[in-house]
Image (cartoon, rainbow, N blue to C red):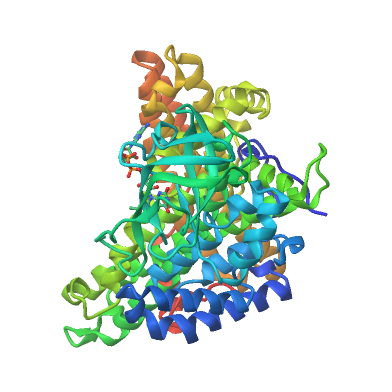
Length: 591
Ligand SMILES: Cc1cc2nc3c(=O)[nH]c(=O)nc-3n(C[C@H](O)[C@H](O)[C@H](O)COP(=O)(O)OP(=O)(O)OC[C@H]3O[C@@H](n4cnc5c(N)ncnc54)[C@H](O)[C@@H]3O)c2cc1C
């Protein structure tokens, strides 16, 4: 049984945790991935143009086909007719369901925010009524939280619910609801008596429910996004989901898994993007050569692949942590679904980091891919133009990246305060070692991955040290210090990304030998270098948030000392990665 590593503890543990990686997928998981990829190749890719025209009946048919293959029931418990599979398999599916951003979001919203509120918070009767229909694709699900005046500030919704006898009357307008144009069932958030934040299951055919016209969006043009209008909408009282006044647990609880899935779905999108960019770069000739031969084009492809590798490593590491937690019996008396929910909450920091890193990695990938296509990329002749538009939303929904950054550092510091994360003990060690630098982590020159191990260990030490310095020197309420929280979040994300890539490569080296995995090693070197360089800047900014004068000078010296590292032969690594990408015509590394 895998060891349970509590959420956020990656920061304080010595390097060397065993993590779940794509190389370690079980035969069943591989089979699932293959079936999902075949489905996308056969059913989605040939219909991408039709999907883009917002053919909602087609999307419904595709959801039903996905339902026949079990793709809609991976997170639905067996007791409700679902497959109840582990979260790593659920993530594999989220990664594979691509071929069209509009399809991916339609599918993702249905199986995620559209279905999971009932899975996790529904009572037996609600689950029995809705889950079989949602799991088969007979019904489509949606989640209606956002309003014109309440986006990030979701608790500020104005939609009201009033109990009248055995019915609730709902009034208000929900905005930008994915799948609304075709959904049969919505989880709607409203305030009972204007103050108690609560959740309700609303059916499309309930009296007083109407759907607004489709939005005209920058991207995801094939997916449905509309208002849901509730005018004295009458719903039976037994459609209350969970308890009155506890709807925030549902609204935010569901987003933990949503963020994880979004981060992983970005991997699928980036693989597809990289593949089209590589193929084009091999075909397009300028100056009598294929543009893939030019160093600056090769560098782009290699950098995208390296961030992709880091994201993949973070993503499956995180789903593996959740699966290990779920595999242990719950400490308190809890249903299985409550246990899963508490696992998702435990790794809320990791999921939010993945959401931020994945969405920004995908934006980087589509931007660089468009550049590879030159002017052709800017026209509708090639799919890359659509990828570019579709990608942008990922930094906005499931909590904007700003909100997720605040969540990463805010949650981490709260856990430290509650003595759930032994950061002060590590920070003390770091402070002592800074006075005696021979005690800082270091590896002998020439040791396999030695430079990367040193940098990553020190990166974590740096984050622990600066988090402690920042808290000790800050006189304001922490949640008012977004400069501090934002820079700390970036440091943490860089540390998690770099460490995840490194741990994966260390496992590959241990299994196959260093010489057998040169490209994985090269990608790790690139990622660790990028993360360390970014972290150095964030660290200085963070120090400047709370210190000045001599104390700031001293801390900047410590930052420089901690991140002093051997300079890798970066262009050699980038070239090795690019050569493999060109040969494989896509990202097939290292599995
Ligand atoms: C295509 C699409 C599909 C969607 N699907 C759904 C859906 O199915 N269901 C649903 O309920 N909603 C959905 N949404 C809504 C989405 O979740 C919100 O757009 C998102 O939560 C952000 O809210 P907002 O757009 O009102 O931005 P705002 O909250 O107004 O934010 C604007 C900017 O201010 C920043 N900001 C806000 N608060 C803070 C803060 N405290 N500190 C620092 N910066 C801050 C934000 O990060 C952002 O950059 C969808 C949106 C789109 C565009």
